[in-house]
Image 1: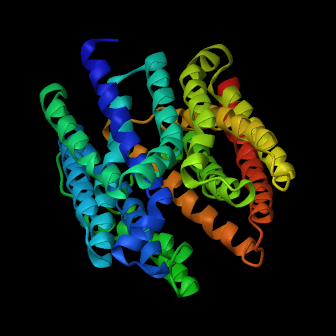
Image 2: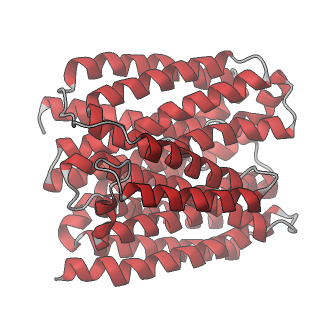
Length: 441
C-alpha cells in the first residue's frame, strides 16, 4: 500500500466513522440535552428524526454528485457541511436551532457516506479493496458502540456539546489533508437529473418520516409509494439518471442491497434496545452501560479487519453465510437470556453478534459494489448505503408496532430479537439462492 493509499484509506474511514459516531453519540446525552434546551418529548425525538430524514433523503444524490463532479470535490464539500453543522449543533440554544442544525448536519453526513465508500472502490483493486472494505465495515460497526461510550462520557463528566464541538476541528483538518493529497478525480459531462434528484429526496424523506415520526403514517407511506414509482419511471427516461437502473441488473448486487436492508432492519433492534436492557434490567448508568458494550466494539473491529483472511480462503459469499448464521444464533441466545439479568450471558450473545455482524457487513458491502463500472461507483455506493439506512428506519417501525403493548424492557428486547431472527433468516435465504451460486460457478 502506497503512502497516498494509506492517507486515502484513513480519510475515508475517519469520514465514515464521524457519520456513524454522530448518530449514536446523541443517545446517551438526551437527558441533559433536554434539560438544558428545555425540550419536550416531541422536540427531543425530532433532534434525531431531523438528522435521520436528511441523512436518508440526500444519500442517493450524494453518491451521484460524486460521479458527476468528482470524488474529491464532494468529499471536501460534505466535510465542510458536516463540520459547520456539528459546531452549530454544539452551540444551539433552543429547540428550533437544534433541530434545524441537526438536519443540516445530516445533509453533510449523507453526501459524505457514499463518497467515503466510493473513494475506497476507486483507489483499491482486488484483495486490497476487500481489505479496505473490511476496515470500512469495522469502523461503521464499532463506531456505533464507541459513540455510546463517548456520548456517555461527555454527558456524565463534561457536556453533551463537547461531542459535537470536537467534530468540527476534525472535519476541517481532514479538508486540508484531502485538498493536498486527493487527486482530482474524473468528472462526467451532463447536467444534474433535477427531477430524479427532487423525487429521490422526497421519496426517501417521506418513507423515513412515515416509518418513524409521522402523525399520519399511512397517508405518508402511500405518498412515498407514488413518489418512488415516479422516481423509478423517471430514471429510465434520462441520459444520466440519479440512480442508474443498470446497477440492479447484476444479481449479486441486487441481492446484496435487499439483504443489507433486511440485515439492518434486524440489527437496529440490537443497537437500539441493548443499552435500554442493560440500564432497565441490570440498573446500570448510561456511562457504565456504554462501557459494558466496549468488549463487543473491540471484537467487532478485530473481526471486521480479519475478515479479509477468511474471504481469501473461503470466498466472499461463504463468509457472508457464516456471518448471517452467527447473527441468527446470537439473536436466539439473546432472546432466551433477556429475562435473566445476567451480564455474562448477555455478553456472550453480544460478542457473537459482533463477530457475525462484522463478517456479514464486510461481505455485503463487497457484493454491493461487485463488477460496478467506475462511472457509477458513487451511485452504487449511494444505493448500498441507502438500503442500509432505510433498513434501520424500517426495523424501528416494525419493532415499535410489535412491542407497542409490552412495557417490560426485557420482554421488548426478547421480542425484538425474535423478529430480528426472522428478518435475518430471509436475508440469509437471498444470499444462499442468489449470491452463493454465482461464486460457486
